[in-house]
Image 1 (cartoon, rainbow, N blue to C red):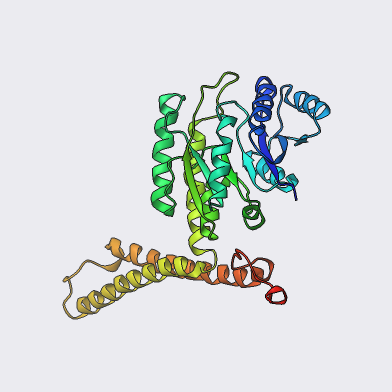
Image 2 (image 1 turned 90 degrees about the vertical axis):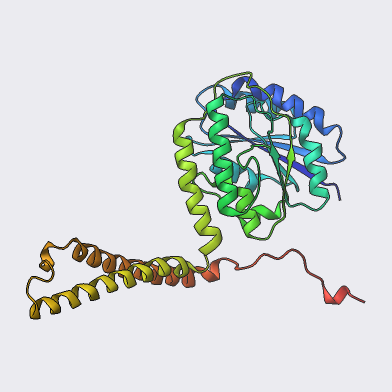
Length: 322
């Protein structure tokens, strides 16, 4: 059976780069023994990107296009492309020509050697210094918090086995963390150094807002990968700690109040002591976190039948073992 490689490319206002990008992909595929397809996902572009995609699809049967009604974000574009892809493996790359398609055979080779996800690493980057600095800080934080040690989590050039996308659901801006989500399911994640090129057309979509959103998404991913099956472990632990500290404070206040009854003036009145406010707030916070933990466990138990709590790599059929 002929193997097919699917290229999934999110597009947002990249009119000038689409034609040369497709030509470079076509040149690269000449080195491969696989069939191939290219899926362009137009994420609500306001320029002529969709017209270029339609022209490419009309001229080449290997090209397919998907157009969103508006801009839904890169994660949604990748999800739509993954659902439409018929190939295995699946290669993703950005449409701005900074990812070099000629690096793809190296990633496919690493996949053949046993990896499930291979991410590119732009060791030498041709981006503004502030973008490079923010990216390095972000990658260090992600690697430290998740344990998935990659130099470039947000690199657009990646290669996957299609099984990864049958078990991972993308939403919001979680596309940055596909390797982390895949590793949490037991998939083998690797990294290869790739060439990075200057952007020849258009302008970067980078902004400080993306860094802030990325950090908030990282907290979400950390919770999902570590506690999605046991939310009470983290919420309950925080709640129990707050409840105990508040209880200790309330106990101390009760003891000092009793002492004041026998030795007036030993301690200030309760309403003049900040500890009263802190202790009450801590008890209430503890009760709230414990309640949230119980509710999260109820939702988790209710939805357990809708998702698998495991990831199967392969099986053997006893009827064929003769």
